[in-house]
Length: 253
Image 1 (cartoon, one colour):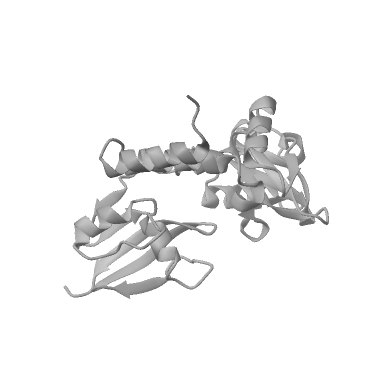
Image 2: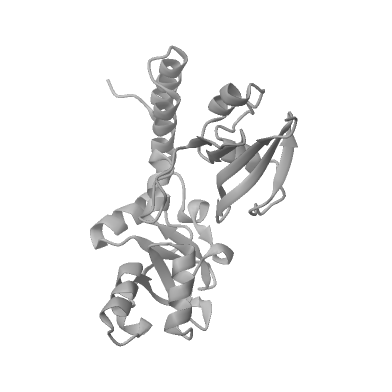
């Protein structure tokens, strides 16, 4: 007998309540059904947060910027973010530098997909797979650049945050010598409660990153801090609007 989407969601919730599946598995089921309902505008990196290479910049300036940002792919713009002419892969940039070839951004610029804001993420995901691409520019109703979506952004909607080729493989919760913690933004609130022995559960928020995002001045920035239950919660790393690393210090010690 076939079940509706809502029936499957209810079955998953009941299974979670009875300990048959864990929180991660429940979230995975919910995300699968949300997948077909969301548009690229819902998950995109906004234009203001896009880290781009400009055709007019010198090779050394571009190299310095990419070493600082440590991303795998960068949109290439001409004059402004409304004129995205392609993207570069970092390995092509480094290859030019190492081999001593002519240092030309144009020669290593690849074509980039573009889709309207109304495109569903499931449609873009199929397009990524069909065309073997990883990045797309999102176009607004006036033909300008609205934002950027990568295949990682789409996959994270289903399975949670995944690692870029440059991401550090660190533990989600690190205890420092002074008794403070460095915590990954995707750590669930229940785990933080257990470690700090303080109440933190908030309705509709599952992770420490989401919890802190709801309490700081927006957009979140490195160094933003709140104090709660004798602990300072300090943003130590952001990825656009996403809080990815948090420093937690006990202020009563």
